[in-house]
Length: 152
Image (cartoon, rainbow, N blue to C red):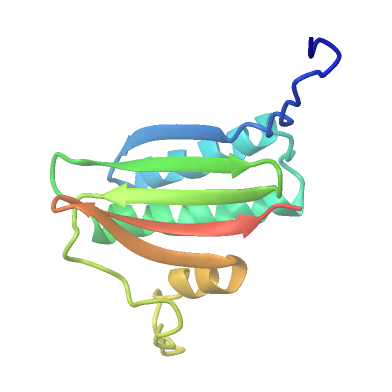
């Protein structure tokens, strides 16, 4: 009877893409996180020589270095997770480490480093380059520092 009425189908949304890897909480692990993120972005369509790949790789590098330096617990790894939302070309970068009690300052409250300091500028770069960033604790044993960046 209603054979002439075709069911309407919602268009399939573009699937979200994920990349997750555990790495040693060492400078070598942070360096590897940077290289693997650049490779994954290249695979997803943002070649190595694009500004989007450079910015995202820099953000991964800063967060992975912080995870290796400040979030390190002997014998525990950190986790890198990249989530690409293709519909708006947004990349979410998450670094999860084993020190939930060592939380960074909240966004917008980062102190300016002294010109004589050799470090302390990583999160300022994250705050400047990312559209959003923050920290979450999903369980009592880990914390995740995350940021989002528009690739397009």
